[in-house]
Length: 220
Image (cartoon, rainbow, N blue to C red; front, side):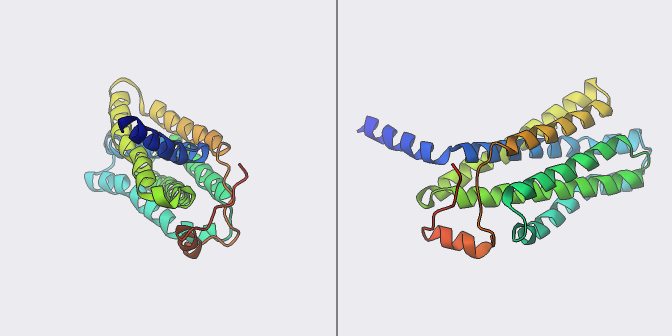
């Protein structure tokens, strides 16, 4: 019956939307919104405020993507020596430090370096959250759960540019940088809501074992 089917759906959603899942998804939404906010506005800042050439402005815009890719390359190795929560803290802290440096960068070259390093932090955070979401989801709801989690990135691609362009029209870029710093600080607070303990030797084999039915160790 329809009521029976709705009950099954409700039960499945309860198994997906745990406190860990919600916290990790919100962290990803917050960090990626800040990422896309600057992605669509930093070129204007580079051209008008720092007097960069068009080619340099394009390189500055893309440097954060390169930093994000670099962060994703090393995040797997770091997970083998650091706990999930510690690596999240490390990524967000690195992002916060170099987001603060946006306020200090006075030349295009300085901003280029700052964006690469802040992108590295975003890469760490986004990769770790995605990996852990795949690990904590029930095996029979893996596809559904990952689809729900991916909505956080999709929403960020809409929310970030909207807020960024709106702020660019009515506020100075300093306020936008401060908002991105605030997003990082909010993400730090949300990390405390994540209570997942991964194995000490966390790697792709652990993911594979979980996919075959191994339970995650959690302190909930």
